[in-house]
Length: 320
Image (cartoon, rainbow, N blue to C red; front, side, top):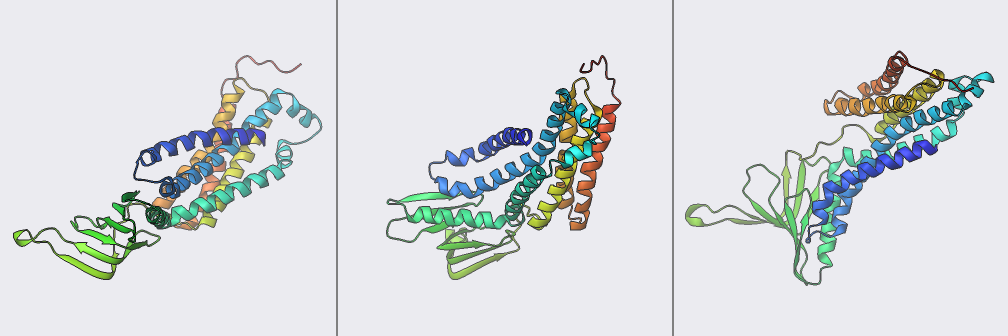
């Protein structure tokens, strides 16, 4: 398990740094409190943790198998009549722990992916709370939304911005805002709408108790897969790729450039699973098509293992 955890830690650190770069402009924005940035940063960190674990588990097990071979332990297991698959099965407790961890991350990340409007709603609420606590006049930008909270002591915060409708040219202010989970519906309470100047430079101001905007093109594509299906598919694909990579490395024995071969064998399955999962999801092919993701991850691991086994081995010295 130590190899998988080390790989997970390294990959997650790299992915987290990438997420930090994405939110860094918001973190440096003086009108944006950290509490407002956190909901979006949380979603990115969950995705980074999930993806890094999907890759780290098979990679870590392939490297662990390489170490068993190099230290002669794999040969001892073979002498005792223990098949590589049985050696892998002996690590079922570790596998179960990693499955639970990956499942939890997939469910949590899938919630934000399937309902990005919840993240935007959280951004709006965090911004309003921070604005209400301001002791002086201030304004707080809302990430992902073309709006700012205006903060005036003694008065409720108001959201000012442009409706998320193409070529609207309107400006609104509202005391509160609600967003649908799929980002296609916005509701504004105590809304005031200002139109662009019309004849003779006059503008029209309308005041309504509740303004509902429907049919808005979403600025983020929501996932169509339930979080539990996402967790099940990715866990199966990752576990299968890890098992097959571990067994293949043990079966091959000591090879030149064994670490390089293990890295290639360890990452090809999970990377294919992540790529195929996303393509099926964005193409809206249906949940049933996701059943091919574990099959492709396992099949590609076997195929690459077979190709690597046919490469020239060069000079080879076994353990005396």
